Length: 224
Image 1 (cartoon, rainbow, N blue to C red):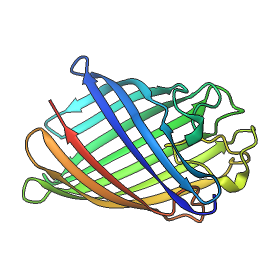
Image 2: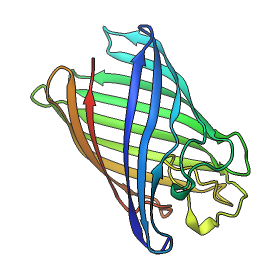
Image 3: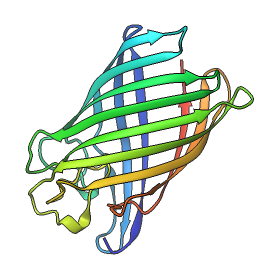
Image 4: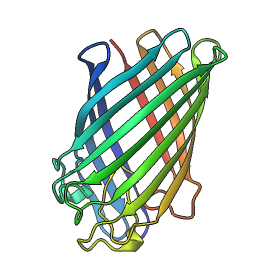
C-alpha cells in the first residue's frame, strides 16, 4: 500500500449468562487508515459476536479450559476493507494454567473461515501467552502468535497485499501455504479489583509481514 499506518479503536464486551456460558461481542469500533497508495479513510469495522463455554474449571490446580465461536457479519465500511462477501466465522478453544503461584500460561487455538470462499481467506491460528506476577499487581508478558493460511479469496485482491492477521480478513488471492508469526512484548497492571490496564508492542518474526511492520496495542479493562 506504499507505506502508511492505521489505528483501530474498539471495545470488547463479555456478559456472563451462567457460571460457564459467556456472550462475547468483539471488534466494536472504527478504523482509520492512512495509505500512500489509497489515501486516508475511516469507517466502522465489522462486529463479531458469539458464545464461549467453560468446559473445565479446576480451582485447586488453577486450570481452565473453554471453547467457543464468533460470527462476524458484514456490518462495516468498504472504505476500511470491510463489507465484502457474507462474513466469516471463527471457532476457538483456550487453555489456561497457573504455575508456581506467579506464572500464567494461556494458549488459544482456532480456525476462521468465510461463508463465501470467494471473498474471504481461511486460516488456523494459535496464540501462546505467558506472564509473571510481581508485587501482586504487575504482569510482564510475552505472546507468540501464528496464522497459517490454507486458502485465499478470489475477488481481485492481489497476493502482494497480504492479509490482515484476523483483524481484517481481506480475501487476498493465493494465500494458501502462507504463514505469519508475530511476537508481542508488554506489561499489564491490575489497578484495583475491577480495573486493569496494559500495553504490548507486536512485530513479525516471519518473512511474511502482511500489513504489519509493527503495532502498539493498549487496553483498559473494567470488570463487574
